Length: 285
Image (tube, one colour):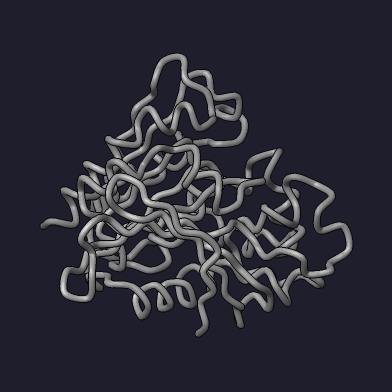
């Protein structure tokens, strides 16, 4: 698959790059950011961390606002930050609402027309982009982790729960954990996959965690006490309760409620080092 270089900037001895490619899965051009730490090469490969951003974001939000490059360089991690949805697909009203369409794929595979032709983001993240990164960059192929923020936290959980054993570690910033019960998010989800309860639950991590059948998984979560979406839309407690009700104790959650922080990137950048420490320790095992 042809990769077109969009930009490359030196950062903490490594390089923050952006590439563009045509996605057969999404039937449109897609961009992703990738940070390559200093010294990485075909002879010196590194673990990789996929990071999924939230609603309205592009690949730029995380790579320009989170300040992660210092820690990616320090812990020798390749970091991949994809765009959050297909773009410019000529779908009516695709750019009109912040929670439906462009920037709002929900990381699901859409089944409803006209979205289903392009909005196959779960397959794009877990299959197409996954293989593209592993085939094109010097990645240690059995050392892969995933993280996400907000709707990207939902996406990261989806990937981990639906692909058991693939990811060495999972970490989340203010994740949306029960989107079929969120008054803000349910409209976007039903637009993409319809209104049948059984289908909605297949894309809701609070339901999926009950049936996860894979190796033990520890999930690190940070969220701010002043997050405006905390009680109505993130519903983290619902996910933690469902995970704790499992009798096999396979899903372990560590949740840190940080006093006074909101939902934005000042919050993410404050705690980003903790997440890189977490992933580095898990991928060094």
